[in-house]
Length: 73
Image (cartoon, rainbow, N blue to C red; front, side, top):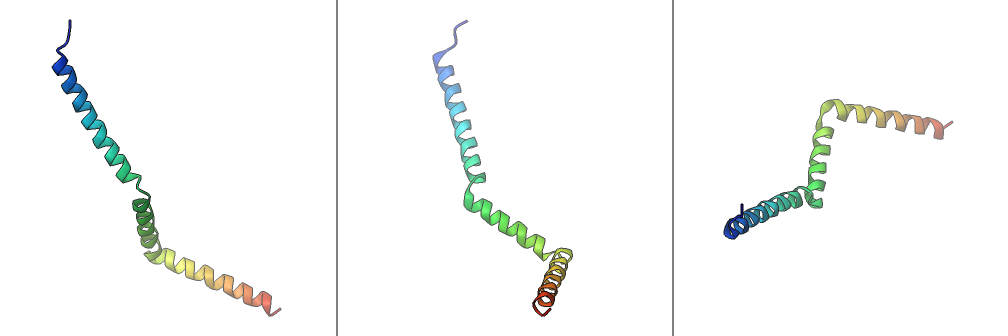
């Protein structure tokens, strides 16, 4: 059964519009600036957690103590 050329053209246009929308969404999600900003926000949130913050302070103090001990030996 033959299909109406106008219906085929309309389906093609709808598919093209849907594809364009999908590509725009993917381009927005893969934007390097947005990814960097998201990474920064995630890192700030993790470092703001008291468990992580105080653990890093403790590790830094331990490293500093070990370096000072090695220097003055």
